[in-house]
Image 1 (tube, rainbow, N blue to C red):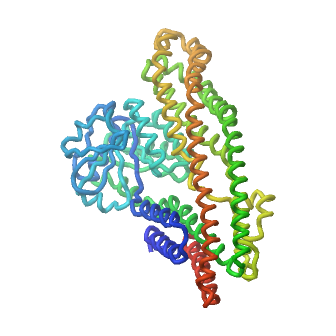
Image 2: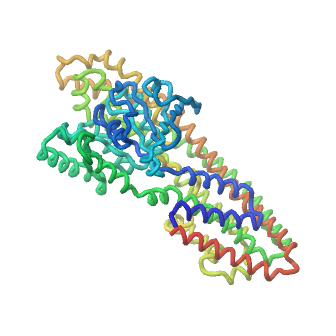
Image 3: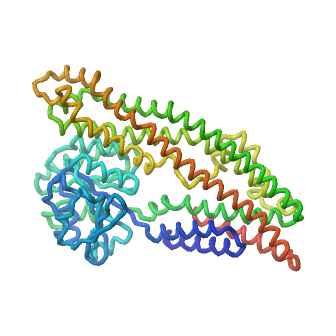
Length: 558
């Protein structure tokens, strides 16, 4: 059975279990949300390269149809997701609105109005791709703002990038090399396709491919380097082999395994509460309910105190650490910035963008993760204590296997062991170290810097080609870099504060859901006890079997 079908089956069985024991409706909603995500799963493959590298031609040759524009000016480029379906184009703007176009209108779509477009084609090759979506991306040479817009979108969506380079270039251009380094920094998968091999000799082709492999594997060892040409018979075979070689199942598992494990764990915890309270009287269960309610009040107070500490950390340590990283990378590259400044405004802007985008995303990502990790660990331990109270100590519990017993009596180990914390720590829905959050925060900072760069150039005369390179370098270090960092400094705190509010809100919601689960399960245990009095033994046996069944579902996922 394919992972997609297996995960659907597992979720179906878990949902049936939740309904059987009348667990919280929120659980059912969460399961249905994941089921929908699984049904809509597809690997998006952004195809990126310099203008005229042949990205669109590569896709057109694959499709057997010259649909995508290949001579559109780079500044008008827009990301195009090519999918199987009735012929049409759906354009998506930044506010979530959509507009339908005919295929013949593709060149008339304004890239400044829309975030991206979906190109639907009744094409057998697309149908055969199944869960792979080809994305024709704006070129590296397109307008910086448009290129950033597309890159930011697919850094958080695309799990596999394909970089197209023209063989006649002879080597990797700095813009391509920097982007590969950036993907390596984010630990994202990519491959490189050396295109238009018909334009060079076999000797040069072999040399270029060899050099590419040597360079690429220093960034990511298993990155593929393939060749292609739309002018040679079977020239697209390398592209086809690459598509067929994508491990969609592995990518699917990476995306959904943790989510489904969380659901299984949540249902199992609820069933354990029912089982562990099955031989307790109603008064004892009510006492546990009151104790949990008291602890919840204390937990909310602790949450507020931790929020104050995080706010202080963001306004001081986090902000300064990010700015320090930006200043360091710009200072280290002051010579290349001076060379770019001599070449003119566009070259300087592109160089600044190439340098600050990856460092801002990576640094913000790291700082957010460090900021929230300790807080999450503290809250996780508190939630485990609440679970311990709900579980209680009973004869039934003593009869359970070692794994279930650890849930009831292993909390001292959690408090004292870093490894235990990692093992038992609650997995929250929100991933505080995710690219999705970092890119959302960083995008407006970069937009602001790019907006002010022309003024910085004019004031210091960096586009004066006659100005001595060393003098330019000194001016960049002493004047331009401080101004760039200053522009980010003025906006960084508000953006990070907004992220803090969103992350804490999501964490609080997740904690409340678990607390409601415990509360509801205890109440349900009273109700079940009253209903099952006439056949209590059978009820317990069935509950034990269902907990074992839940464990087996977890084993299925590996």
